[in-house]
Amino acid sequence: MNSSLPLLALSMGLLSSFHCIGMCGPIALALPVHRGNKFQQFAGLTAYNTGRAITYSALGILTGTLATSLVWIGYFRYMSVGAGVLLLCYVLYSSRLEKHFNPPLFWQKQINRLKSGMKAMLGSKSFGGWFLLGSLNGLLPCGMVYLALVSSMATGSISGSATFMLLFGVGTWPMMMLTGYFKNLITPALRTRMRRLVPVMLSVAGIWLVVRGLAIEYPTTTKNNSIPVCHSSAAEIGNK
Image (tube, rainbow, N blue to C red; front, side, top):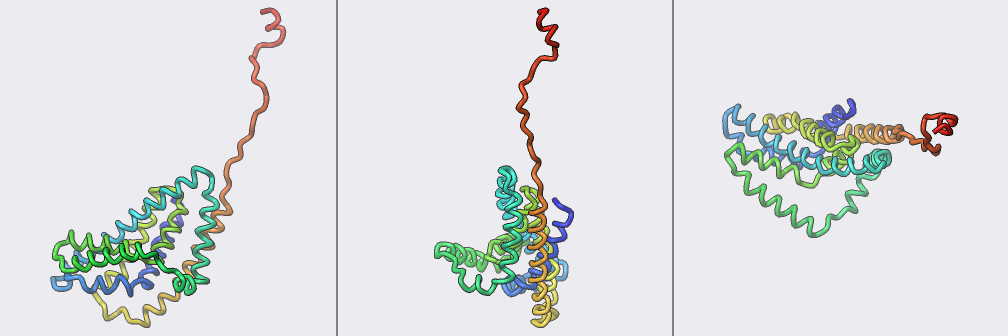
């Protein structure tokens, strides 16, 4: 993986957590871990957020598989440029895209089933249950997660994409842990200021992916049209 990609993944996760805290924050606040001592709270929130990060990493395996296929057939350059263009389009037309994007009915039914399963697990008192709750939460529709998945394809490998998404999940930890511990400190004003940085970060990531894609050079192959001959001289051949 390129040395700058881990930093990009962590930065996307950190800033995205301010954008998505409205969806994930209430779940973290609803966890019954807040009724225990400090250690139980920390362990419970860690299990929950680890589940989310593992799910993101598993999704990264899927996008990494696609990226590997594109690398193999020689389209990695176009994939990187396309991913950067998608990020820039989201920055410029996010409100229009969200307004006109309507998931199909069958997808909405699956999401409702997922939410029902999560609701049933909110009363869990075990670390395994909180881990599974976080894992299911990682499957909820989220535009920032989708953008991170698109960016993860720039690694060009399955392991790289999975690692990228794992780091993206780890990047969301500070905000989610703080939400669970100190919900009064996360004011709407703070969230608004941090969310303003999201378009800037996505723009930088998009431009970087486009430039990276344009800079990729594939090795050129030269064809040897000469006819191979033995190393013996003509005289030697005649004497034979």
